[in-house]
Image 1 (tube, rainbow, N blue to C red):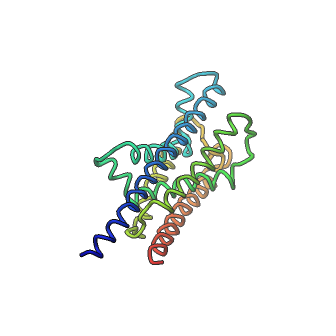
Image 2 (image 1 turned 180 degrees about the horizontal axis):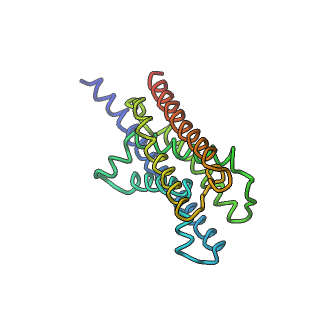
Image 3 (image 1 turned 135 degrees about the vertical axis):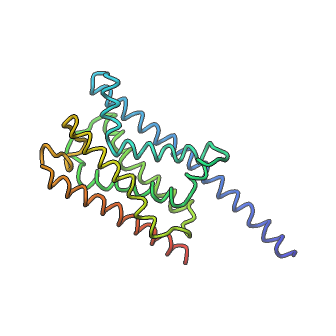
Length: 224
């Protein structure tokens, strides 16, 4: 009994410190990512000559923006909400891992396929780097150090495809209606349907493979 009490005395502060560190990290990250989103909106608004509605329509058509909003919301809920179903949802290892996958894909596609296609300067460059580099890194760090990955399941990788698949459907329908596409690799007008669909398929495969990789890493780390 004495030994158990000593262990609890030693271990309890570690738990508290870990929890407090996670909350502080989540708070700071939420501020950084929300600032990044707001900065990008202001930059886009200026480029669109301050047409708010049109800017918002274009702004929310980008997977980068919607995913960063999810990231910011996740960290905000973790840092602010003391309890409740929404907090429980965003604290789940599966939820955080899925969001980590989404934002990492944002970084990968931008840095390997889209970087340099449009010259970015000043605040536009700052917003770009924050959304496509800093945000994915912050999310990945949180996943590595603050998430209990022991209960992740490989079958979840398929469930996590719902969001990217829904986005692809949204882009296709939106494109049919207004003949505009947010990304060049799915721009049907310029590259045609066969290539656009093939590129979309490769993106979905990337999401799935990365999901499996993170689940595998999480399980392996838990065994070490």
